[in-house]
Length: 216
Image 1 (cartoon, helix red, strand yellow):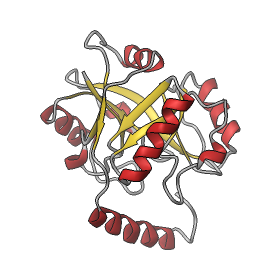
Image 2: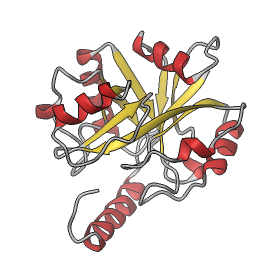
Image 3: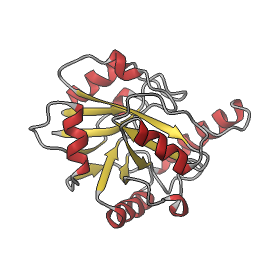
Image 4: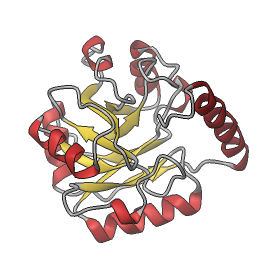
């Protein structure tokens, strides 16, 4: 079963996908599991009741140093805490903490903030450049054993651009999280093209300005 472990809905400030649109896009692209990792939001999964796709309750949390993915949590994790403080909050909520796109400028943590308390590193991200994905995958392999992969889709058409394979025996999101903990190796991701990088930079700078120069 293919799982896209990094998808944003309209509950993210920069997301454009309605929850049902995400499910429909996943089904169309052969994705059997989705993690809805909205920026500092934890609502979309409550609206996604469709037995065609397994939905992992998740969040992309903005720590003081960069973005952290929280999988399998049972509550909202607040933003703007320190890295270790954020990881501790994720663990207290029953989840696992993954360093998101570590080499991405502005929102990535950078190697210096990949502390031992993390459960793993996002190896591939559909909105990261090829060289950054190569570095992330290497870092993930060195950090181990938990690896995640996600499209980082903000629109329905990007859902399923990246995925990792989990056992077909998985029936619940808890099964998928346990499988992830065991270490997975079969994965795939597109890389962000030069044109998509240009659009991403323009959009990011514009939104940063509109937020009053506050990081997402």
